[in-house]
Length: 282
Image (tube, rainbow, N blue to C red; front, side, top):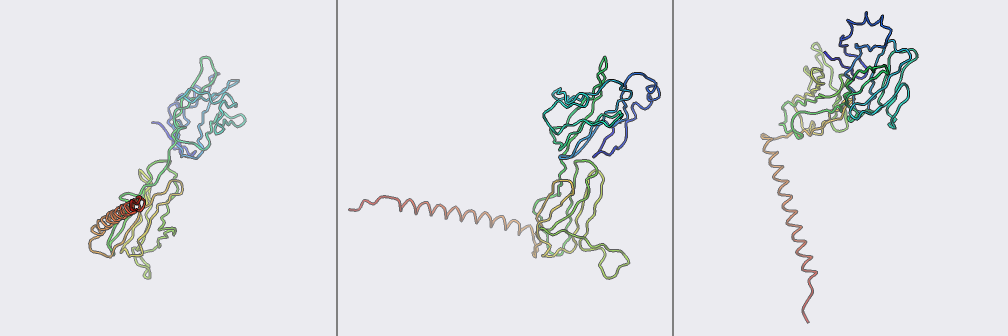
């Protein structure tokens, strides 16, 4: 099983080489620690850390290779790229050689190889995944509901590392602060009219629930994650029996308005063409 790393947090090692560690500790030659994380995921804009651990390296050194174009990124502590986002770090007497990629972009995703200049050379491959986390409010971008009904807005973030922080909801520029209530409270209605439920399963999910929708609940609702791109929808609370008809009526009205504008434009063109026509009267 391949392990993962999320924003520098190890989610578990593969254990592929642990059974050989006892034997390798007595080896006079360099060898890789296969218990390090080899599948790394980070978000766009963050710093990616790829850690290669080499035991008993002696007088040898580590080189980093970007496999998509076979570009030598570094040899020892010297970086061989004009991209200043790349940097190699190694603390004194440490067996870990770390390739850092600052302000990571999706184009940085791919395989990176850690090489040791032995004969023959030693190498171990790492996979870097740079993802752009985006929020998505499920459903249409315009939501029409009748006054007094319930509204549920569901916002999900399916990409990105697990530490996606939290999600805030806004109506317009005002943050929505649900009222915290308890069953033994009598002054505040339970359940509350506006509530937010946040949970992590296969995705980070936040649900904004509005009971007994009022006209003042109409507006632009934004799902604002702390570490991802926001998403918005328009909620229209209508004091009508058939919101769908109102929606269709609004569409028809827009079409009628466009038709009137076209007629007006045609009239103006005809008027100017007549004004600009030369007179043949003597």
